[in-house]
Amino acid sequence: MSTNRLKFSIVVPVYFNELNIPHTIPRLQSLERIIPDCEFEFIFVDDGSKDKSLSLLLEAREEDSRIKVIKLSKNFGSMSAIEAGLKYSTGDCVGIIAADLQDPPELFKDMIEQWRVGKKVVLGTRSDREESFSQKLFSNTYYALLRRFALKGYPEGGFDFLLIDRQVVKEVLDIHEKNTNIMSLIYWLGHDRAVIPYVRQERKLGKSKWTLAKKVKLFVDSFVSFSYAPIRFMSFIGLLTAVLSILYGGVVIISTLFGIIDLQGWTTIIALITFLLGIIMVMLGIIGEYLWRILDESRERPSYVVDETYQ
Image (cartoon, rainbow, N blue to C red; front, side, top):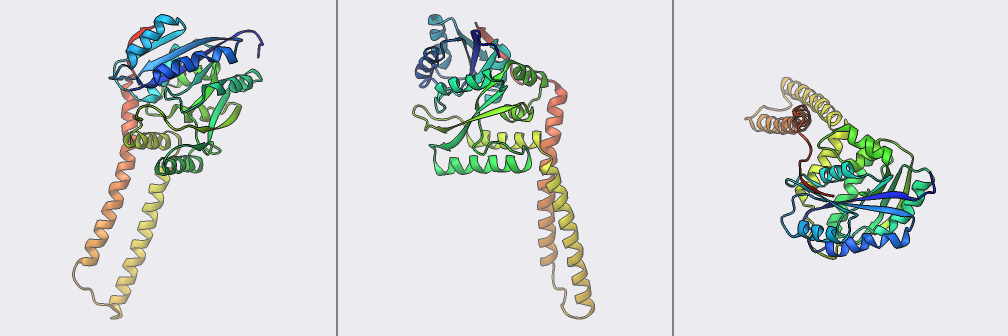
């Protein structure tokens, strides 16, 4: 890598972050003191916020021309907002960080050092989290399943704070895949990576909009996009159920013929039918997830719509 002054873009998805923005912007701007050989570009993507986030960003832009503001027409989700930010970035390398300051921006200094020695992907991985037990349980379970069934070797604590090379940015944008996890997509690309562990801080201001429904969607998107495990699971359950049904039927027939048991009523049959129908409905739901994504891709609708840009 060249030792000349480089251009570093930082993409920040914003959604109901009016309490954090007055602290996030100065913290990012202060990076010029610890990374003096960088030309900075700050790209804030307003993902349909209904609070004062946009107005605060525009006020900051009036004082700092390095700030770009991309306003989406509605809330498309953090992954789409990040994709929009990557599209408008122009840096030699691009950092991605949340607006709530749970991740330390100062770590970008170490990331850039790794990038300079040739690492095209530098991940800030969470060695621990200052979060509730339920949040840790969901996250740890999600990443454990992702490592086991989808992306081998995926960092145990996961990541959404990272730095990537311009080449990786282009590759991500060229894929044009909707309903996906951009972080997992970056990992899937397989470039030489560096990992920098840190402790994710507790959120100090505002309430997270990362709801259970959004977590579940990310969970489903990750496995449908990067793993055939759900389909294999369906095949296994179907085969297991068929074998058990045949064995059970054989036992009932033989026991009846030899007078070991008496067939009484419909309780057993109803129980089996209910059980099997439940399995069938689960399988149809999994197939439906795949079919919906095929339909969504075939429509060729954009994953986000830009309303206005301020740059």
